[in-house]
Image (cartoon, rainbow, N blue to C red):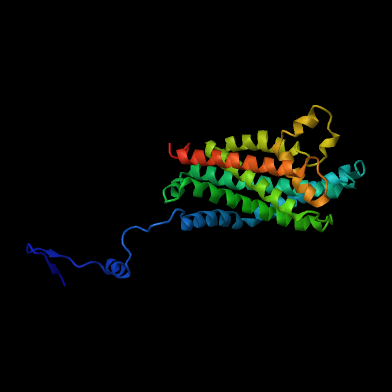
Length: 287
């Protein structure tokens, strides 16, 4: 059935789908509020499913690697260094290894996702949807944090079977575990946006992440360091996340708890602003 115009012409009937949309009151493109929760949740879920689909590589492998570190250092140094801060060396070592596994995987999650998308050219699939820069950064960052926390929980549970450590302050463990994973996740976003190829990411890992992690007191207390290395250690942000996380288990730290928590918050805030600015200006993403 057609409708006749006043000028004698006719209007073709609306398609069934369009008529149904009109009947339901749906007109034009879908509108979102101040936050596109659907888009944010979709991007976050995509990134989480991406590493869960290969959990053997992204979760199980880091657990095995960390347990090997524990075995090697315990066998090599167990008799030479029996106690640190009054606790057995394996119990002192375990928290540092756990948080190191967490941050390495949080960094790998965001950095690898962005670099792969840029190299393959499908980064446009993330940039075209109606997702602003805050939603973009927060979705990627929290997905990387999720991977770090999952790896940390898995590693901690497996390690507890061999090293029966106790929890002294759960709040410190939760705060520093999440903050550490978030920090490396944000660094992964910044590095992934900056990098043009996988060699650039390898350079960040080899010359920044690994040295900072190994020189942060993961395997030792900085009290053993001579000057000026003892003072320099306090300028290493990795030191605060490992020291705070470990103090939640053994109840002893090399730095005041308030200092570590404040520095971690400040660093994460600064990194989030840098990552947001890079995405908002389209640096190496839209140019």
